[in-house]
Length: 185
Image: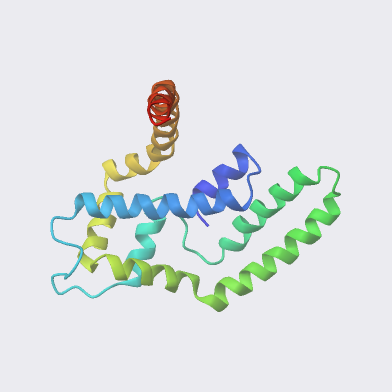
């Protein structure tokens, strides 16, 4: 559903888990921006009415897409990429048939379930209309556009740093555990 899903398709055929990570990424980014740039608490706005279109704009500005028309294509590509990696000999004709079928199914389900409305409801429970307006203002600014553009690389580098750091402390942690286990024997 979001641009990172497209990136995940290109980087690997990670399948459904890549889509789940994408959803989480965009939700975390928008929530972090709202918390960081909001002075008031997340409860009680200043007379603003919650605006579905504004939430969807915030999602789109954060690098997502909220158009139900684009969702089937994104989901279909994720599943087809996963299928191709698991069954490399599958014919293009079969992949085309599966793609059309999955795209039709996902399109109907997205419209039927009001996916956008459900997503907006989540934001409505946690943010005020003012919070969302501030997120949109930030993401519409030069700094916000740069933040959105650089965030995937920042997250990759941060994850790599966390992995390397964890690996560096692992021997010491193992030594601490071993020492305590020896003492309790």
